[in-house]
Length: 250
Image (cartoon, rainbow, N blue to C red; front, side, top):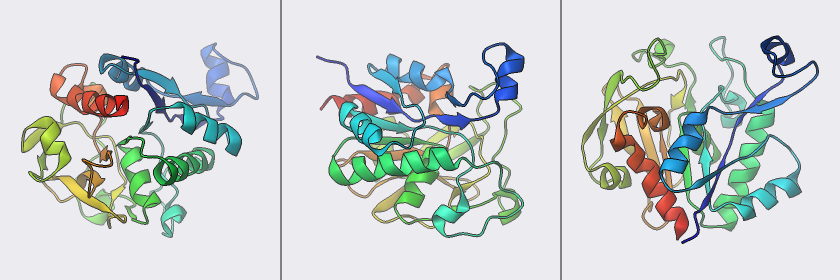
């Protein structure tokens, strides 16, 4: 059977000084960049990763959407709060309008015009929620929750537990009600977008997974942690990618 092609969104970076100083680029360049963790997980799950460079060419974006069998919205920089009609505050990090616009165009076409599976990770969860008219917690600690930006360990180290809803597709995939995860975010989903339901929660009440209310008919699933990192050491987290890739085969 032909392996499915999975489109991976990526970060946009115009800090040409960094790449010039690193010896891999020169001045004036712009970069579409993504950690290898995502492509490694897709390959291990039986798919072919296809990194989608940043562009605002609508014809190109439609061609990519037609080419791929599934879309993986990856992690990265903060979402612009204005996308959710929220006022930015001083806690917001650097946003990426170029990436935001491309992902919204991809989502708009794939979600409305196809039934292709969509998987979101971290920022990808927030993007899906905002695209479907939900909104954001703009900064978790200042909103009164525990700190979820815990990046002082190796990427595969866990930092807290999530509780998985038994009526969720995520529970069907993982077969467990509790899971230890890592955590690298300070934004989170707040009010749910249209047609979504919660798949998992953290102990302090942060939404850790979202999915379509009819996810078994239309695969749309997103998690707030980084299973692509944890899958390096824990095969349970690879199950998410295997289920996603297997669904894309259909």
